[in-house]
Image 1 (tube, rainbow, N blue to C red):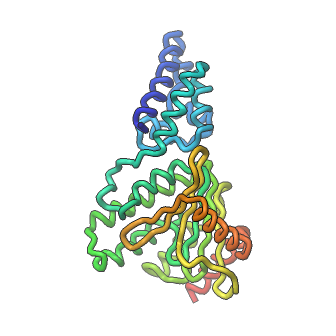
Image 2 (image 1 turned 60 degrees about the vertical axis):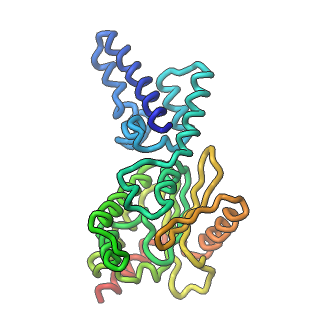
Image 3 (image 1 turned 135 degrees about the vertical axis):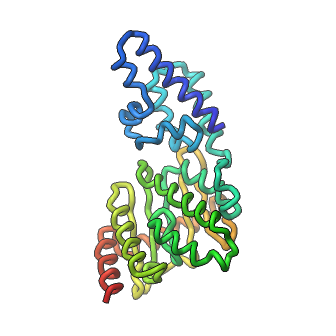
Length: 290
């Protein structure tokens, strides 16, 4: 269904482009390239092309409505049909080249993550995947390669998938991640790798839509017992995901989601605010090189 929606949207855009070009004005036609439309709607540069190709879902219903307005689709039935197609596309598990290399359930989570409008995550073991530097991810997965009996190809594909996830951060969804200081003190790879990881968190936390908080090691406060990510959507009920050894566990019952939301809210309130993250990371970096 995601591919079908992408095809419909591409057809609408190309129809506008053709009509403009038939008016013997090549400049008008150039206004209807995927890149030009993306720029007008403030999408990331490659977002619309990937949506049209069915590679990623259209994240928000409001994005679909903006596209339909841009393309001049005024017929209510046509708009309703495309909206239903949009909702159906969010329920489909993505088919990607990483299927054979990711933990059970991870592909479904990645599809939901792409469709989310808000991401809240907590990690108390390793840096959250959305914040990982490529060198950190490589060192983390490489060190576990023999123990977990994974091939070099599996490790490389997993790293590629993790890096592609970071495209979510340059979109307009809200991302809020909480890390424990102990997670950042655990040396993965080498001090140089950790220095790059600290710098990456600083860079990403500078984005307007990204907040990162760090719970200090010596702060006597509540910490959740295990990692989790809470995803919220425009048209679907929220879900919570947690990574296991070789599988992904997901919760969608309101009572379960509510419990995780309360845990996250408690940690947000207790931890130093996002404005303190730079200072904490700089202090950790100084200690790293003593």
